[in-house]
Image (cartoon, rainbow, N blue to C red; front, side):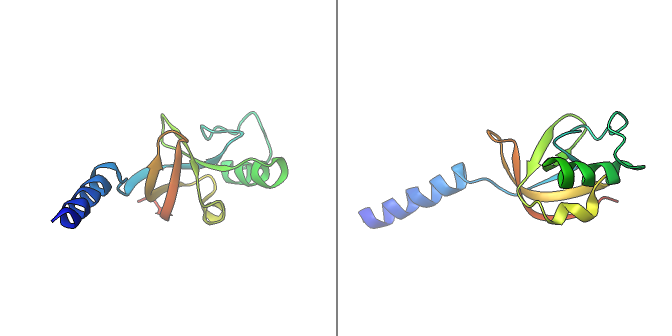
Amino acid sequence: MSKRLAIFFFVVAMVVFGQRPQTFTGIISDSECENGDHSHMRMGSTDGECTLACVRDHGASFVLFDGKNVYVLSDQKAQEKFAGQKVTVSGTLDPKAKMIHVDSIVAAK
């Protein structure tokens, strides 16, 4: 009986404390120009080019800017092809680190 009770509480704890995947929509930018405004950097003719230059040449990280919040993205490889674009990211949020653990990323419709 106590083994079943322990399993029950473990499952309940996982449901209550486990994070569920969420969907986030925003612009792929970089940690140098978090809000997606690259006009002051002038490191390319588009926001995407500037984002890539900041990541490649200045050690910045890809981030998602949703209009209010900036989230670091766990997967720093998949974002490259979406630099400067509006995307939808699915994943779990670590609110303390403001990081999305990315499950998938697609161009937003």
